[in-house]
Length: 175
Image (cartoon, rainbow, N blue to C red; front, side, top):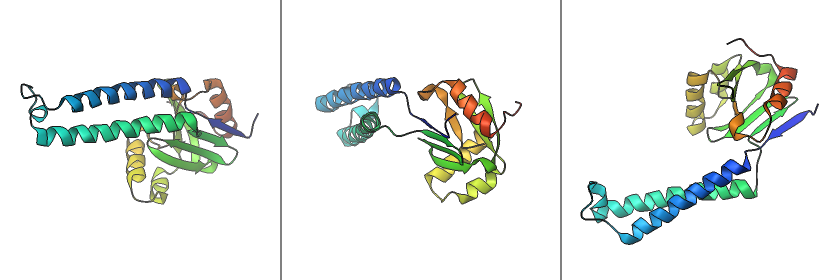
């Protein structure tokens, strides 16, 4: 067995998401070009002072998401790295890293998410610098008991491969 396992996001899902964001971007540009609709039921769509700032904010968000999808397709980075010294999970929720000594085991949640449980989640949270990543980690600990989540539906890997690697360094906890 390999001493390092790098898991990448599925390209098909990235392509599909990128196409969806591109379609949304096209629709948003058409709406912005046509301008505010005085007969609209929704107030913000009638008033130009509200319509255009909202439209530009939506445009900025969709451009950011499209840029993320294109960058992820052109330069794929591993979303999860399992190696002999520990695990690194890099996703929308932040980048979290823990050595195997801090992990007491794992559970499988809804057949597609592996939750790696920490021996001391509070000590792990205290090491994270203040900011969005810490708040997200705190929310994940509150919901799942750990910020270290491996979502197999989004990754280009078989669950048997993950099971074998995790089994080598930790044990499955009873749910």
